[in-house]
Image (cartoon, rainbow, N blue to C red; front, side):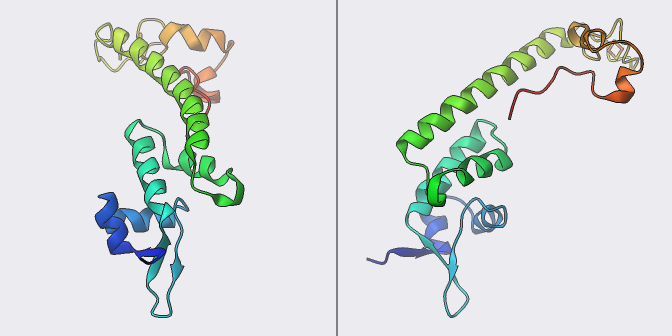
Length: 153
Ligand code: FES
């Protein structure tokens, strides 16, 4: 049995379209070598790498974040079980923060009447929790976002 697989085999076994695999490769998430006939060949552990990418994407982890996490592994290895547990723990904290933010925004959604005012005083979505007030005085909207800070990447 060959140690390497073609892009068609990788697509068939992972359930991911060839175009998506090419996209992952263009983003540096997976890598291949080229044969003399210029065909891509992937190591077998790429199957696991693709599966982990799909799982991370499914819970909303941006591709850039996944790539950065993978790039920090020694010898650009595919995450093993311990690597994945570390990544999942870190990402779970980020997800918890994003979920909490979305829940706050959801709870305030019906209080915004969608009039377009984006009032700093009366629109609960424009300035939830008076974030702008905590950022200081002056043109805080011109200096940056009034929305709550994004969770750490
Ligand atoms: S846009 Fe006016 S209250 Fe939200």
